[in-house]
Length: 266
Image (tube, rainbow, N blue to C red; front, side, top):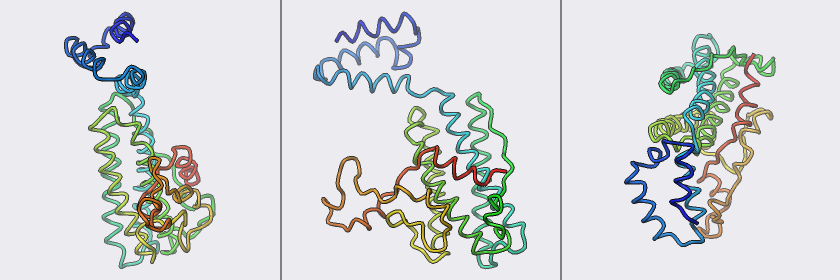
């Protein structure tokens, strides 16, 4: 495999190819070193990694992921604003906590809209939400137990949703870092809500927890995974499988997240 010939052929159709890696001089220097160090059989894999880094994620692709996250943040921010405005949704002892959560979600919305605009894209409009999910939760804003259950569902979804998109943001260190910072806060929200509801702060196997309606099971499916990066964690650690599932939180595919969110979009 002639690495230099491949790069020169790409240069004919992409004049910015060197800028995607480094300067022209730096690119050829790095490629020369690369060719000496990498075993011939591994060259195709390594080249694939290089080109994925250079071309694998466009700015528009990152904006699409951020708009997806924005839809979820709209949902959460609106849920907490409406809940705090209602007279019977939130028990008095939890008001201060949910005021903090509302402020966090509002900040996330503002950040994502600004980040999307800075990428030259347009933030999606806020949907009209129906937190009764078409009547499935008619007392969502008058029964604190129902409100807490929905909060747990939204926060647990948010945690897995951000994790599911991390690989699609690796092309931008700044955006990936910000997304992970939001992800950590969503995880703290989820843990506290679960504690308020009398559950563990983490998820055991794929159990949705007592009092969670059956339609929320999709949020927890897949959490029972015990193989991590090809490693059988219970086997190598001696820790019980159920505890291992608590130690590793699983990502959630975009399709599943959108299906969950769509239940609450009017």
